[in-house]
Length: 434
Image (cartoon, rainbow, N blue to C red; front, side, top):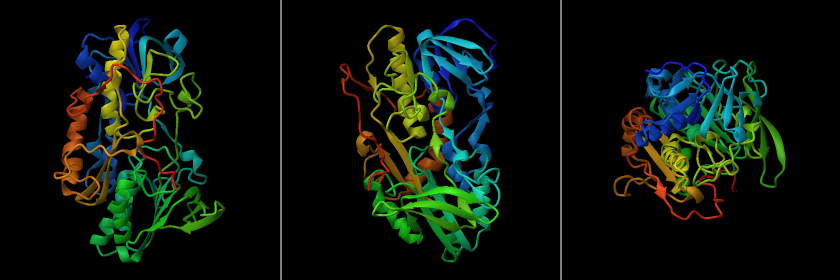
């Protein structure tokens, strides 16, 4: 168990900002390669969540308690833990100022802060999330309320929303919807429930190869598919939601929909501490090369996970591939060696289309399919019971006891001796194409 660190003036080999999946996985990866490395971690949360499990909590498969552990139990004892957030970055001085005015100095900085769930962007939501039939599997602790609503709804309208990209796990809004529909179908209630998917995107899923299978479930569950329909506001007392609908001729209109259950996916933006820092691009994300994950302006700064501006799907599976790349490149940098480890944009989204079956989407930059398994074992473009077994039984222990411990089975980085000068890549998952 790790305990909190006192204020110190030492210079750390590595300072990591953020103790989510990206931060802890990279720390573990670094220490596996060089155990004597001096590392400081700034992370204010006392708990660590296995967020990919919240979909299954909302579907009545997992208990919420199985998705949380104490942060202190996950941080290696040799790491100096400061349980406060970053206040500002000074990359020219190789330092980070924390919220309690502690200054951390580093030889290399790894930014893994995650992103901000922008609930305030939904007018009228206020304090109604978690009541009035309004829920979200994205909110810590609310997935059990999702399952409660699903169990209790026997007629009426259920709306599931998806905002503009980027968001964490682009398939998560659909996962919640499909599992809900499957439950209602099994209970013979679905024919009495008007299920609507309102997505700000122009397509159902950003990698075309997976759309036919998903469309078959849209038809199976008789879901009303409303693309280019962006949630604007909510009237919780009247149980109505307002949307901006973009039509085929690019004209827009405001429409209102009543609901009995509303599953929200909030807009997601960069944290203010990143947006207001020298590390940010024009959109507020940490500005890194998409292959090495090294900052474009500050050579000893790296970023991974949801806070980086890499055009990949923001998932835990992406982090699992990114962590070894960052670890190896940081160590090479500290030893004055050239960077050779690259990330290819891998991301994975296990789409829970029904209880017991998953469409296992795996892809890299450019939307190119990147299946882990041969098609005779798992065809990721089709619903699979084996993929469900992987999601339910294999991925949680892989997360807790492998990824966060530095065991990188099937996650080796790609090695390149001569990195290209043009490192701009196509997005791995694009919901905005028409």
